[in-house]
Amino acid sequence: MALTSAQLDLLSQCFLFEALPPEALPPLTASLSAEHCPAGTVIYSRTRFRQAVGVVLKGRLSVLKGQELLLKTLGPGQCFGAAALFCPAKDYVTTVQAKSPAELVFLPHSWLIRLFEEYPQTAVSYIAFLSQRIRFLNRKIDSFTAPSAREALLRHLLEIHRDGAAEITGGYSQLARTLNIGRASLYRALDALEAEGCIRRDGKCITILEDPSKEGA
Image (cartoon, rainbow, N blue to C red):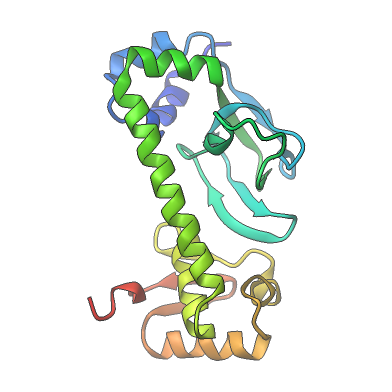
């Protein structure tokens, strides 16, 4: 079944189509259809994945390293799988799992090749996206080699926040394991950031009041 107009509107938010004329998207996607995934479904794993870019149309996906380390949460208009598109490796680097019931559309390798040939600017958008991912991963590495628990925590919160808030999946004990710090150190870091007016805690939701990365800029 062809994508609905609402689904096309969400698909158009994907980085690939930023430079694409709006009228070009419906005929390009005539062969594509949405797929439904129940909550908890493992969509990509180390040994099972596609050479395709997946775009979220509905719901939330968790991007995990292994089974526990949350790297990112994806929502409507966001995508995954770009790193595997032209890579000959037989395994995938992360696990992508449906956090809630989700609708996805997959853009296969051959489909994207035709898109890049017909609209070269979309290939530039793809390269720019991969460059941003490299920067994201470098910052993620920095968060694990940070000189203090406070620095590790704030960098992690900045990476996972969405709309000004970061959801602590798995609770604070899991967050401490993710950052490789003790629970006492984590709570001291949380107290320090809250006292500085950088964050506000409400259960497992942390609102970022001020971007600490801009200090001294």
